[in-house]
Length: 246
Image (cartoon, rainbow, N blue to C red; front, side, top):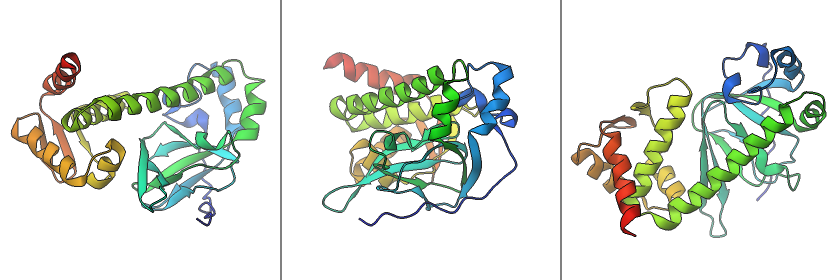
C-alpha cells in the first residue's frame, strides 16, 4: 500500500503549561518548574477532520502525538484487504508509539471525529528526557501502559465469549471517561458497531445481538450511539461469573 503523507499541520497558540490534560499526559509527575520546558516539545498542534488520517502505515516516524481533543482508531490492513481495528484512543492518550522500533508507523491512525493533537518531536523528547527529572520515567510508564493494554486485549479475545467482550469493552470506556472527568454511565460511542466488532473479534450481527441482549436485560440503555449504563455491577458480575466457571 502506498504511504500517505500526514495531514498538513495547523499551528495553534497553546502549550503544555496551559493544558488542562497534563495530568493524563507526559507532564504527570514532573516538577512545576519544568512544566514550561515541555513547551519545547510541542512544535505545533494539528487539527484532523473526522475520517481523516493522522498518519498511515509506512509513513516515516518523526513524532508521537498527544490527543488534545477528540478520538481516534488505529487499524492495520490484513492480507485479504480487510481492516483490523487495533485500538480506540481518547483525549490525553499518546499515538505513534508503534513507529519507535522500525522508524516507520506500523498502523493507521484515523480520526473518529474532528480532533486535535499535539505534535511531539521524538528527537526533542529524547533530548529533554535527559535534562528533566521524571520525564523519561513518565514516558516509560506511557509505553508500559500500552503494553498492558495490548496484553489485556489478548486476554479478552482469547478467553471471553461475545457478551463478556462487549461488557468488558463498555466498562473500559466507562473507566477511561471517568478519568477524564466525564460521566462513567453516559457517553457517546464515536466508533461504529462494525469497528467495535473488528476490535473485539466479533461479527457485526454478534455485536448487535449483544447490545440488544444487554438492553433487554436492563444493563444498558441504547439510543443510536448514545449509551447509558444502568447496572455496572451486573456487567462486572457477568465477566467475573464467566471467568469463575472456566
